[in-house]
Structure formats: C-alpha cells, structure tokens
Image (tube, rainbow, N blue to C red; front, side):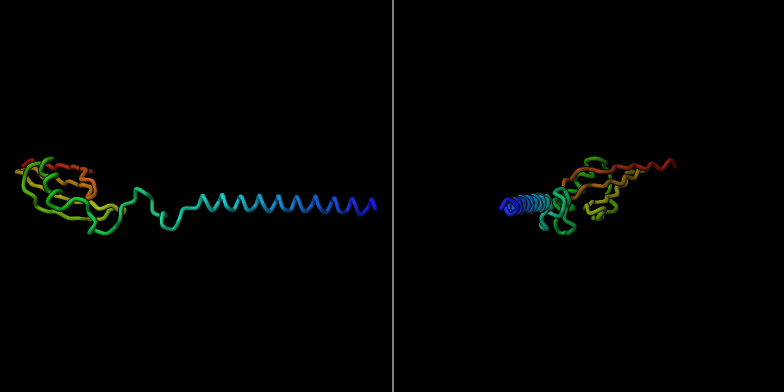
Length: 120
C-alpha cells in the first residue's frame, strides 16, 4: 500500500507541477499578447498620413507663413513628401536674395529657411 500511496503522491505532485507550468506558460503568452500592438495601432502615434489631400494648412497659408519670414515674390511652391511627412517647399526672390523655405504642411512650422545672396 505504501508504494501505491507514494506513486499517487508523486503522480499528484507531477500533475500540480504540470498545471503550474501550463499556468505559467499561459500567463507568459497572455503578457506577450498584451505587449503586442494591435494591427490598428501599428502606425506610430506621431506618424503623419501620406495622403496629400490631408494637409492641415493650405497652400495660401503656407505662402503667408513664408512671406512673413522673408518678404519678396514667390517664384515656386511645391507640396512634397519627405520621410512620410508633407512639406511645402517655397522659393522667394527679393532683389539679389533668394530664399528657400520648407514648411511642415501639418503644423505650419518653418523647418528650413535658407537665404542665398547674389553678390553681383
């Protein structure tokens, strides 16, 4: 009888260990699943959409921002995508100076202001 009792106890202990291992594995899988981002949230929160029709500011507003930073005559305006970010690239001439201004199409922030002077 004692042998069977020991076998039963050992079997019960093994089942307990097996249940504990299964529980630990299930908890680990659940934790890993919770840490995985949803397919919907795969995009970074700060990533801007790449659709050119979703520019927050219009071309006229971008031109006004550019002219407020450098007065002159606008010679070129382009809406380009750079690293998934929409940017207005505006060129302005004023006498012997020419400015190239990059403006974030979502925020209106001036990203680049480059002024070239012709020393003629």
